[in-house]
Length: 272
Image (tube, rainbow, N blue to C red; front, side, top):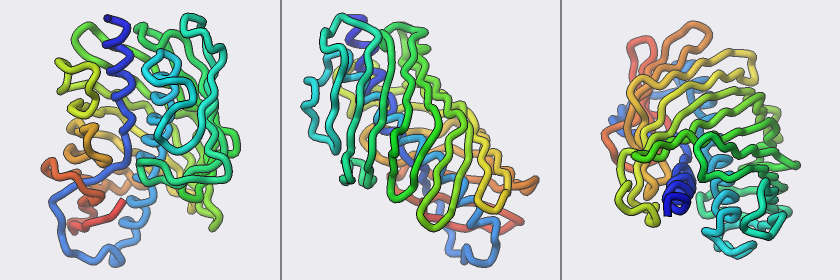
């Protein structure tokens, strides 16, 4: 049972994790300040990280028997080796082929390879590598690692994004590294029902934009991510864009794809 609880918590932990959003909107025109565009681009890294977390946890569920091998209603096909549920380490390949739209609304193509040990055990890891993988037209490369740091009272997963690069067909790029921790704050009592799980997210992302600008994203009050919403719905942070501070507010808990940023004394609504 302990194995099932930990694994189920990890599965729901960030399948999820998905993009950044908010409330508290303002009608100011984002085009009046170039920092608004830089901030919007930089926050894209949070969105891309989220999808990869979900893919990794989907594979972990396969490995631990929470899903039948290859049988999944989400986009892409899965293969697992070795098939013996008691044999570890395992390698799982998620193949999106020439492209399909997943249940998070993202269009994905190519493959993702996952390697991991007994994910339900604290201290275990899942590594994720891309194989010609694209998401909404952006090709990704680099390494993600998920570390299980759970306690008997909470699911805790730390995600390391190392030397990640996203490049689209228009020549736009994002290069980033991240360390973020997801701690479960609701849904403990129903470990096999991930829909009621809610997580606090803390940590940081360091990004370099296409134009060479460096952006450091630091979460100030924990972001709130519920599994029944694709978006982060609350929490605050600061983007440091080449030394210019930009405040980000994700709102009051409303589920949407908007965020509010404040730069140079002016507040703007952005879509992420």
